[in-house]
Image 1 (spheres, one colour):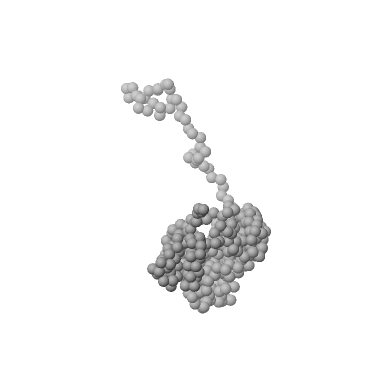
Image 2 (cartoon, helix red, strand yellow):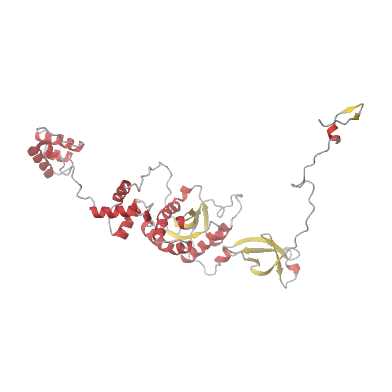
Length: 420
């Protein structure tokens, strides 16, 4: 009677070692060492080979289901959860966490990944080979804070796009502050900075991109309003040359775009007011899961001096010169200075003009606030438009115009040429 035995490459190698041991060409100790097993187990292998021949070297589990396979009911529960539209877009890692959280099923990420691939819910991505020199983390918390804004459809189809401002510590990768805003702006960053400084303290330096809020790209020597406010607080501002240079906050943006979007979907959050209210809870979860311990236990955050007026610092500030009529102009609006002081004491003096987030304008002279009144100028009369205006009709010369007879003369006199 003939039959076929299927053996793997490992089992064929085992057969060779066993035959050498039976032929006394190697010892049992040497054979066990070559098979990376114990002498006792090697003697078992020799016994099975002597009793059953080649089939004694074949695994008895071949063709049988694994002892570690998922139970049928547990597998069905996982597949149903994977197919639920509510969990659309979930990756294997996040799906395995939600299975444990909502169903009490503890399975590995790889098991979930394989099931999602079988169900067509996950497509493995090919990793691109990119080489970037890795920068070592700072030693202490607060030594360097990376800041960035991320525009994304955070509420998916339940609301418009918005920008999430993130402050990430370089030493620990912990999120120190975050807020949803309509767009990146000086006042948006200023508001988040005030909250962060009052709750945590002043960091040593910020690390940002070259967005116009942080750097005046039109002139190297110009100082932005944001940099001016930070310099007044003793905080350095470093602008990165590439997104990879501030990779901690960039990776945090990717994680937030994946996990935060799905968490807000599960909680039914449909507006950014509720999203901002949920952010502190999500940040606690994020820091527990992804933050690392710094190399030094010290904290470089400095306590905020209560005497510092952050609202004043994070206002738009500029210098204006008082005219002989005690007038100043700011943002195309003319203001009259109301004062009891002699006018000659104010003329040609420079004043500091500020504009807060609400648009209110204030002026300060030697740190004293001045009283301002808006002057509405009368519009000028309508001027007569020259003949070169855009709506001027096109002039067509008549047939007998001298221009048409230019260069046509007989006996030195111009002649009339009929229009053909």
